[in-house]
Image (cartoon, rainbow over all chains, first blue to last red; front, side):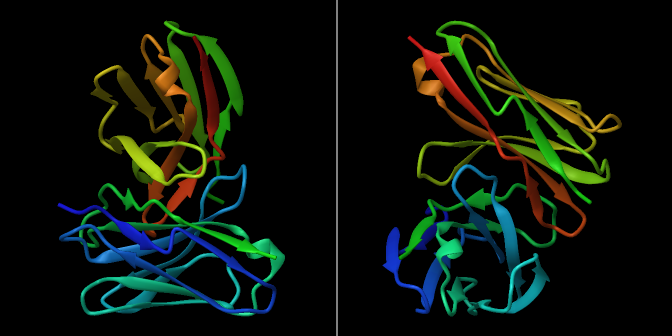
Length: 113
Length: 111
């Protein structure tokens, strides 16, 4: 049983560019949440997708957007990159109908130069 | 505001000693609490999940307690080993189905 997978592993971009990160949830899970973890900090909630719609959103600007596909996989898009967007981006999957354990992927390390 | 605090931020212990990591949260209306392990530059590995109705959970050398009324959880790691060196994160799940994390306890076990 594959766990949560994320791609790419690492990414280097320059300011002003756009980036797309991808996540495949654990088999059987229908909810995907995205978190941003800056160096030395705990992860911060970005948003959550269920039934292909954004259901919850944290305190992040509209430059951060996402999508969920019918197979439950998800994308995180960040436009007009800033130096401060450099972080580890984590994807978590869970079952929507129960407030259960959330499983995390290995993350994507984004560096903005 | 749903805040999670972990103290101490960093600690070092000799191999074989027991580790005690503390987590406190301001809003006691939680659904569950998870402890995670994070190695440098890596993702999060779930260690223990405690439902709001439970007082503790155990897995091998790990034991986590939960006191919802006082907003506290403690992770105990018995007989620490160098391989236990990592950052340990506490996360609380609220009714909005999002996890609120602390900043972590960075642990070094000295051989």
